Image 1 (cartoon, rainbow, N blue to C red):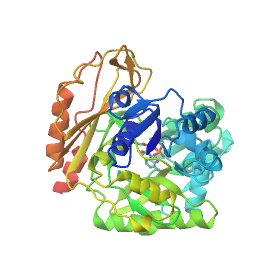
Image 2: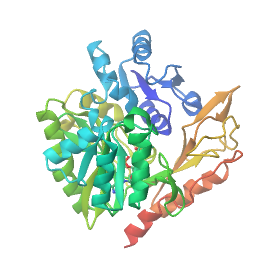
Image 3: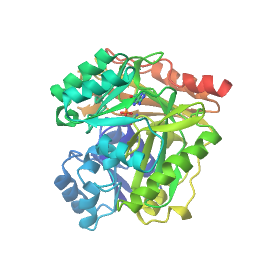
Image 4: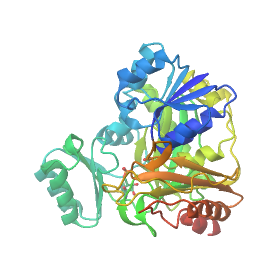
Length: 427
Ligand code: AMP
Ligand code: GLY
């Protein structure tokens, strides 16, 4: 088989790497990919942007691709799956209608409320004055969210009414995240601990992937600005067996059933961002794709043939397949470029990539680019250094050991990835 993976992040490198290991796969094309996917044996980059649906269709036809796997949300919300299917091409992911679970927070909140799926109480506004009046009435802390896709920049967790009001000024009154912020969701602040719960779904059935936890703030101790994610580990002990059962029963199963009942059966990766408080989970958000960086440690632990999972999901027979996980823990540490999550310095050659790799260690690329055969920095999140270990502690140690050998000017990372897992598992 020839498989096309769409995207250029660490998530896509990890997805493509696992796909390439399937005995059924001869070659993996990545559009547009990065230096890491360019280096992998049996993998090739194709210079087509993830939002260029016509270009991707032409590529898939020309290369006679057997299966396309979509990494990021943007092409999904543009309807890439509908377009590929209409052309008779196999493409894994939700349709445009199903992708609304990520593309519109107002749609998702109304959906969750309608189906009594646990989530924070909320209201939707397009008018600045009434939004401010609601915030003053409700008090702080309170959360202001742009309705549309805002590449992780559309959420403000306001500690004071003034902070919420200035977020509203920037979104509704101004243009801080463009049209995505001209309608906002204001929701109650939820206390607790976050976890990522990702399932692969075929419209009716699903298989839960291994649990994980992301670290969204830039600095150690969960301080500093929000980022796309500075590291992740799997499994996440905060998702106990009891929490897992509640998430399936009260969140995942009713969501899939309701999407089906409303005429948009969900096929693809459904990612529930959870807030867990006193052993009960609520939905903070849905994503209609895998998480980045959660995918990197999760793929390290996946033992089954991932092609079987994609094929079964597309064909609606996930109930007939099983999924095996490495019992060990996996940790992924993001190495970022100076300036991230703001504008970053680019173009620095990355040192230390060619160090002999242990089988338990894998360096996934994200914002990298090949220049004259050398991997150079080309984005905010540059690499995710991953390792497996018999314990979370051992996996962390190995990952950070590998981090030590990598360098470029201005590189930084968090030093405490996985620390909450250590606290929870010893508690
Ligand atoms: P989202 O893009 O909706 O996941 O929001 C980004 C981050 O904001 C989440 O990962 C949480 O850390 C935080 N957040 C979002 N909604 C809430 C909420 N209702 N209560 C507390 N924190 C939240
Ligand atoms: N790591 C968070 C996300 O992928 O949305």
